[in-house]
Amino acid sequence: MGGDEAVWGIVLGVWASPVPELPEVETVRRDLVSLIAGKKISDVIIRDRRVLEGFGPRGGPRRAVRAGEFTRALVGRTVRDVLRRGKYLIFDVGEDLSFLAHLRMTGRLVVGPVAADARAHFAFEEMSQVLSFSDTRRFGELWLAKDWRRDPSIAALGPEPLDESFDASAWGRDLRRSGAKMQSALLDQKRMAGLGNIYVTEALFLSGIRPTRRARTLKSSQILPLIENIRRVLQEGLSHRGVSFRDYRDARGQRGQARDRLLVYGKAKSPCPRCNTLFRGLKVSGRGTVYCPKCQK
Ligand SMILES: [Zn+2]
Image (cartoon, rainbow, N blue to C red; front, side, top):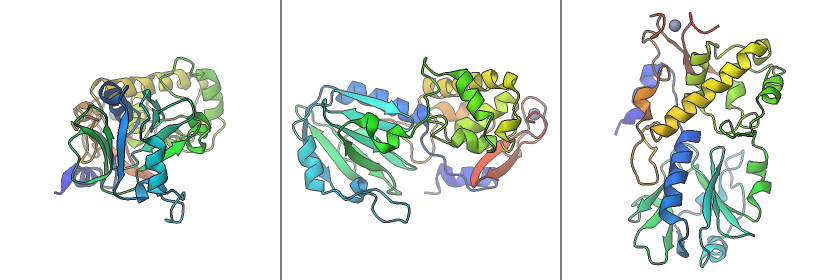
């Protein structure tokens, strides 16, 4: 199939690959809690060991893992909870062990019959359905962590924008010291965890900030409205179970509903709803974005 992704690439005028962001991953997490929390893992089938090895910077495996070790570590364990940090899912299976998942671009974690294209699946006691991990592009990963908080991927993440403990003034001070363009600054997971191209593009539009603007040129009075808009677009995405593109599915295998709510992402050459100027698409550090040349300074 041509798929939504190709259509969006054409609409944008530049190639854009929408990937799961905070609202999509959080939607999957909430479903997983209701579907598998409290269930005991009876089997783990790894069909493609690259799911465990991951991809290093030069395309080689990121870690050496034997499928048998991964399976032995998890069988008999109970999923106590499913947590999220940024775009990572954390399956808590005991005080001393978790397994982590990152969907990357096209990964899916769906509870149901074994998916035909599953690269790995988890079976549970007294449950006919399994948790399948499928991934057409094969960049998604599963791995074990003794203490997930100290896992290097997790430890490197910036604060969660929806957390009550989020320190807006410290975040704003740090942002305004950065020479990065705003699109890139907000995509940096070390600065803030969970944002991707879609929600950054939407939040910058609502804030009247151009994606190419340098972070250090923001006024301090722009910080709080920016954070409010980031939270608003994330909450909006969450309340509609995420934006659907070709590959994203929630944990029940359903598409999200938030796509119709997007104001600017994927709408290059459409009129701005505020001023009627045509939106422009461009790339910032290789990532596609869209903005209104009149409303966003
Ligand atoms: Zn406008």
